[in-house]
Amino acid sequence: MADEKAILTFEGKQIELPVIRGTEGDVAVDISRLYNENKIMTYDPSLASTAVCKSTITYIDGDKGILRYRGIPIEQFVTERPNFIEVAHLLLTGHLPNKEEGVSFRQRLTDNELLHENIRYHFRNMPTAAPPMAQLSASLNNLACFHREFLVLDNDDDFMEVSARLISKIRTIAAFIYRRSQGLPYNYPNPNLRYCANFLHMMFSLPFAQYEVSQEIEDALNLVLILHADHEQNCSAATVRTVASSRANLFASCAAGICALWGPLHGGANVEVMEMLDGIYRGGLTPEECIRMAKDRENRFRLFGFGHRVYKNYDPRAKILRAACDKVFEKMKNRQNDPELNIARRLEELALADPYFIERKLYPNVDFYSGLLLRAMGIPTNMFTVMFAMGRLPGWIAQWKEQHDLSGGRIIRPRQVYMGPNETDYVPFEGRD
Ligand code: SDX
Image (tube, rainbow, N blue to C red; front, top):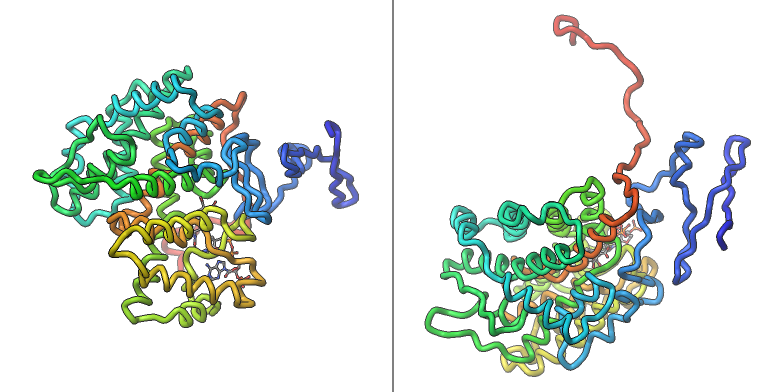
């Protein structure tokens, strides 16, 4: 209801606060004027109870395990031919592309798949063992140097053009990072290949042997990217929006998002999951030991790929990825009865039956099975978070646009509760202990 109010009673005062209700029933108490009018703050260090925006992009119901992009349930993108590029268009514009829009968007991606030749020299001076996420973040800011005309965006056509350039080029950059790390020559993009097939070509073709993309692998990669495409106000999207709120450009905001995603509690978890499964497979660990360590508060070990700030049910993406593993591995001769997939299943079985995980509502999240699929495509573990970023880029761009278009958008600048020393005096050097 328009004039619905909440009452905060404090120090003998009754403070009326407006109430906001979302289209799916979210309820928020608007405290945006609380400090200015009452000099009172709220305290929520991980923002677990705090909405920082109103958004129309992605909806999650963590208790029911629901995830929708622009209202469409994630399960409905699991078609016979999953199509990451149409999902990217949906996130960017709010609607699925019609035939003409699809052709035009794909053409923009094809026209922008190459990198400026000078960017190759940027890679050439990097150590071959340089962390891929460091290179990726640096490369996005590097792109700003070559596309300066898009540092300020004032119309939708420029927005779609720069979005297509970023989405197309992140694929080329990711492949170049991989090829450089392997000491292999770069493969230039092939304009006759679709988005994912072109990426796999750039990753794995050899000068004398064009990589043959199987339909299963191309579909699996489209699906992995779709499932990573957006996730409302996760750590990296919130980072993108915070940087966007200072009116920073899209390149800088997405580069910041990549840095946030790198963390092992966020997008870096897919690397940790694979290393955990490898640790068990190579004999250093057992699934039971993993569960025990994860439950030990003295131990920093976590059951990576488990738990989520929002999902208190099975992450719907993990459910889809688990089924995709079964489907893809079944078709791949060398992956049937894959030992690490079996270990993942054993870990899930143990955790889902363990009171520690049940009480805390810890279920598999998107990272638990994604790495197994990426590894089956031949993508090395240290590139997994780069793949997450490739999928998440359209979501970050959509979040950036929503923040950028806020009329009277204010800079995001939280307050603090100061707990430091009260006023004290400067002590000249000779008077110090
Ligand atoms: C992603 O936000 C998003 O949407 C992210 C993401 C996206 O698409 O952008 O979904 C992608 O980042 C998925 C999450 C990937 N991270 C991991 O898999 C790392 C392992 N999981 C956790 O570290 C943890 O579950 C988080 C970071 C995902 C969520 O952390 P919260 O919400 O801050 O929860 P918490 O750390 O306060 O945990 C609550 C309790 C604690 O125990 P108690 O203090 O109550 O005794 O659950 C425990 C935690 O110790 N716990 C775990 C655990 N996750 C939580 N214990 C063991 N193993 C785990 N994985």
